[in-house]
Image (tube, rainbow, N blue to C red):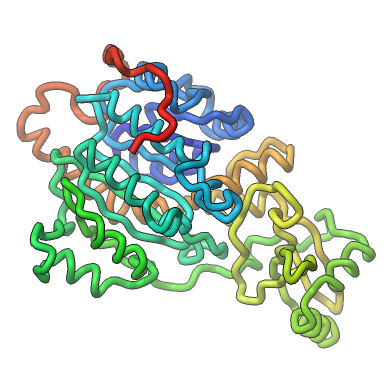
Length: 418
């Protein structure tokens, strides 16, 4: 289906990487980080629509968005919603930039996209006891969006554990197929309730369903048919390079990390070495009971990729092969493969590349959402627009049109907007 979309908090552009396959075209991208922009431009070219600036600069943001886009996506910063953010949630300076995105949508007025997609970590559901999720939902509902929310783990598609929460908003211009609304009478057993009750808990975990039921939105909730992928994704061994040309550690570094393993992990690895078995896995360094432990994953799935900050953030590759134990840091190319973008151009600067991919979305996950949610919803909006002759501002079809900025689009940044 496709159409024009805006990618807020774009990073290196993996949302665009995902949506481009089905015909979506990026009309505006925004991020603060010049190093991520370099990766973005290296992949897509310098087309002039990447806005290197603060999302809170509402007037500047709105003036750069052409026409009326069909979709806006926002993978807003997760740090305050995760353990790394120490529970600050929307009170933190990073994750609260979500409300800068909301302000930009509000300032667009009649050019506001009929579809929005949010992405963030699982901690989005528990931050501030669920109040941050509710604040986000109410902010979008206040702009006229009916909402759905679900979770997907990258491990359903690629060998990386990366559970994420997604929120989809649809305004009243669309009537998405097979997405029943929640009845206004909460006691009724309607199609929405039946879908929630029968859903795969990997897609609609109980905590999320309970939150949605407890939040009475003025616009209401929808329930898209988001199936869990079938089949088994490849193992992590398919993403790891095992040739001698890799930057393998010396014996001392390997021995150090072997000694840091839990007894059970070390015994299992030693048995594999002795038996001449082949094993490819990953290690995270974590603090356990005041000690740094090298924790091995034996399930064929890498841990969640992170930005390479701190001693525990970057993953270690472990390979047992031919009676030999080898270890090294995971490479940027392996990060790219685990994010579903194996051929994405790299800068050649490992820290920059690792940061870009560790702070990005998983491509096949977004493609799954596009197939089952975004493109069907977009089609439901386009059909009546075409039938009516699409009198003005057709969705995503005016790449050169720019509307005047509302008088109140700028102004000072609010500390917290809900």
